[in-house]
Amino acid sequence: GDEQDLLNDRSTFSGRLSNLKNAWNVSEDGLVLIDELGSGTDPEEGAALAVALLEGLLARRPLAVMTTHLTRLAVAAAQQAGAVCAAMQFDSKTGSPTYRLERGSPGGSHALALARRLGLPAEWLDRAESILGPGHSDLRQLLRDVDKRKRALDMERAEAATELRRAVQDREELESAQHALELEKISIAREMRRELDDLRLRTRTRLNDEIVRLRAEIVPAKKARTLAKSLGRIFDSDTRGKLETEVTSKAVEREIVLRSRVRHHALGWEGIVEKLDRDRVEVSVRGKRLKCGIDDLTAVQEQSSNQNSQKGANRHQSQRQDQEDSETELNLIGWRVEPALEALERFVDRALLADDDRIRVVHGHGTGALRDALRRMLKEHPAVGSIRAGSSKEGGDGATVVRLRG
Image 1: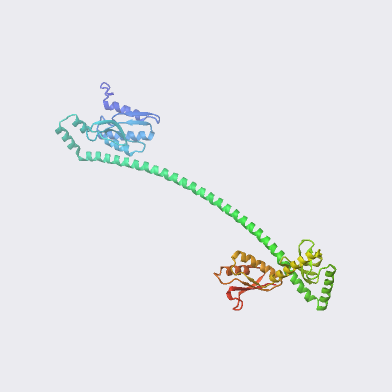
Image 2: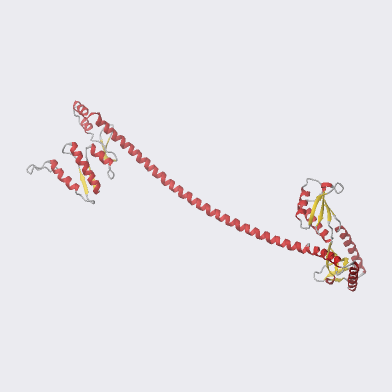
């Protein structure tokens, strides 16, 4: 209220200054409520005192709520960090109050608008507006523009903050996806390495098995031929003849003679003796010629005339098969690739067992697929020394002439 005291020479403004002194000394946890700050004296001086008090309160940071009609104080509050303006909202068309507090806007006094609404003489109010001059209206308009821009900036700032949060979330999701992708790549790489190791192990095992099989099938035959040649170089013809006589005598003692039927002690197969060479015997077994020691064989006794007749027929069939097997030419015209490759491999094995160093494979011209497959197989075969197309008398490119090693 009005705290003037005429007996003590205290005016209304001096009473207010005493209260403002208390507000200046308030602590950080204090509460300051001031109505119409800067009024009751010259507006310039009152505004200066009000701005200075605002800066002092901002330094001590108590909670303060102050009302004023001084534009200079409102502008200072809008420019100071830690202070914010607010104003009572008025209807822009009717000038009537809406009784809503609008945060962020410094507002205005609306004194002339209120005077017009109360019916004061127009001549009086027009003169008042002319005294204020255009600068006052421009300042009010500037404050309104600043307020609009501030609101727009606040909205943009809020949208930017929202977009920033979304960007951070998207980045986290992307980093998570990249991390998952890296883990998946590592897992796939490990699985591929494991599968490659398994494939390498299986291939190595199969290769070793194939090497063992080749050694078992080819190396003994090569060794036998090498041993025979070595013996031929070591012993002269007379000594070789004596050895052959001794071996033949030994074979006769065991009843093992040419064309006789024998059985292998350890393996149990039976075959026909085709060749006696010192202590080695060459036996025809189911179309294949096998070499073994004479001590490994036992002569098979004849049991009956019927059986002898049957054995003679079998012997004749075996001889005929051996003659066919010993042929140096294989005709594969009209065959499919896979069966032809298998037949060629068997034919090469038989040629090696028969000590043949040259064979001819007839495959015809056709599309060339069978020819190319057979030649690829022959080039990779360890027992093949060289291959060439046949001459004009050998069938031309429809045949392949093969030279075997050894």
